[in-house]
Amino acid sequence: MWSLFSRDPSKDFAFEVNDAAQHLEGTFWTLHKGKKKATGETVSVFRYEFKPNEESYLEAAKNAIKRLKTLRHPSILTYFDSLETEKYLLVVTECVEPLHAHLENQSGLTTQQREFAISWGVLAVSKGLCFLNSSSLIHGNLGLPSIFVNNAGDWKISNFEYLSHVDDSFPYKTYYNHKKYTPPELSDANRKLHK
Image (cartoon, rainbow, N blue to C red; front, side, top):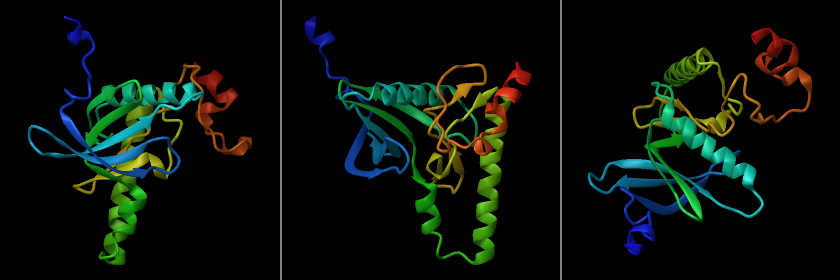
């Protein structure tokens, strides 16, 4: 009976994770390739290692998982599974690569093809942001590290650590202290108008 409660959840996890990792700039996640044990399907695995005195990162990582589980849209990264142990969090998604790596690998395209692909990707991200905004959600961390590209070339939004409802008091991540960079939905005057 006690073996049931002391079972290691990672042994029953339906995915294998490769050790080779790519640190994602601007985040606390590392990106691993993996595969589904039953089918061999290639997946991406985002891993967050717990570190002492970083409870705010842990809270943000759990928020990312919660949001990724519940958001469904063609421009949002597709969630498959997650795992939490005493040492780390794993999030399994469709197979993707970071946008910056994808753009660097596009050297075989003509200038016109590259411009078209980028335009199509920006449109996909815009549609994803419209979906979030229509649900009264603020991404709070949109940037190059938040965009991934799947095997079909579709751009997907992720990094939902700071995603929150317009009325929530969850802390927003900001890179700039200057008010001119504050998005309109976060400024105090506009925030009062939205309520």
